[in-house]
Length: 239
Length: 96
Image (cartoon, rainbow over all chains, first blue to last red; front, side, top):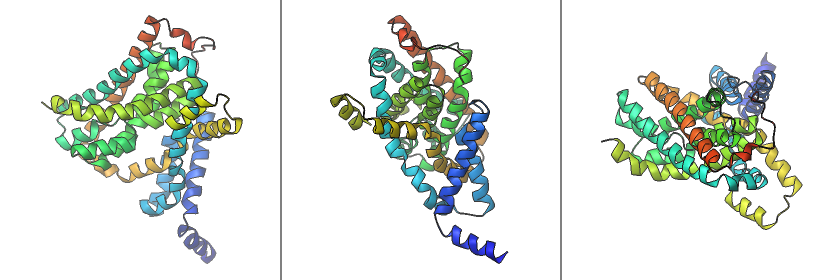
């Protein structure tokens, strides 16, 4: 038993434990998702986060201690963003042909995300701080937090709402698009990336490479447009 | 992303190793959101109080934004006869 305690003391002092936990949880989550035939409800992000959270909470680990190990995974988000250029180049002809639908859908979707969030929040009687945190939640987490902070909202709450929007979108996009009988995988992917940023894009790549490509474009463009539209629309939406 | 894109437009053939690396990363994109997701779980107490209403706004907005974006995109693509962009590959409809 002392051996186990010694091992635990050693491992918990090393960031590798949490890196390994994260990777193992993801491998298990991915295997579950594959076994379910990539069913939308078997979302690998949701499953892996649940596994890791149970271990982190049960072992009484603080988030900074966990993140010291997990940061190596988190860091890869940067290179992955750069890597999105590869499918973009591969599908360049399709992207070029879809330029007009893409740009119109971008403006329509981005404005819908912001306006709907603010209107619904007001209808539900949420306060100003919560409205400010909800408005930019379709942008990627880093941008959404920046926007909320600048507008006087709480970046931590925005991060929570943004990630929840990502997971929600990744789960409902497939059944929703099937119910709408939309077979255009470029449109489906673009909607997933615009609404649910990186987590939606991860889902789109799971389903179809063309959908993933358009999701990646939407993720990038909507980050920019949300940063422009929120300060512009908010005073008007709050009146 | 934009830099790599421009760089790759400049030199037309995509280096195989670069393509493989990018595919590998993007295939496991879900993994990269796990640390952020765990961070969210630690902050779930922020949702207490108005949690149910906040969650309702998240779900409804996500649903509406997804539908509006995809419908606008698909309608314009059809209008501009660019719908062929989904052609050339089998549409099973059974894909997840």
